[in-house]
Length: 129
Image (cartoon, rainbow, N blue to C red):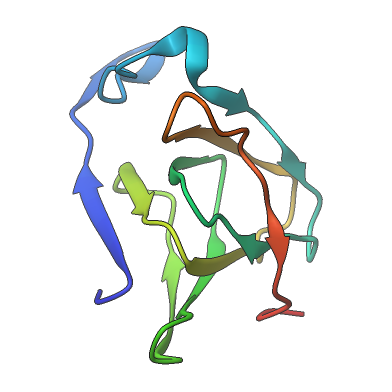
């Protein structure tokens, strides 16, 4: 992927299920952490951040991930299958959107980090319907 970085996450499994540990958040007090849900066919995102990098882990099923580089308009999309757990790292000025293509709700574990003196802002850019 050109617009984003995909980092495989170590997965530990046993008879109860699995556990993943996302990379540490450098400054948790200043990170914007949120966990949105997406009902089937729902879309979240359709925005970009000017000054912050966002990291996302998709939990619970399949999701269409779309990105667009605002500098060169390079558009990419892929289907996250929910099997291999990955951290999706989205740099500033990359528009991004997530569409639930699973039959039940899925969840996004998201955190954004950037300059401490700037609030995390999202600027709308509808790249996915």
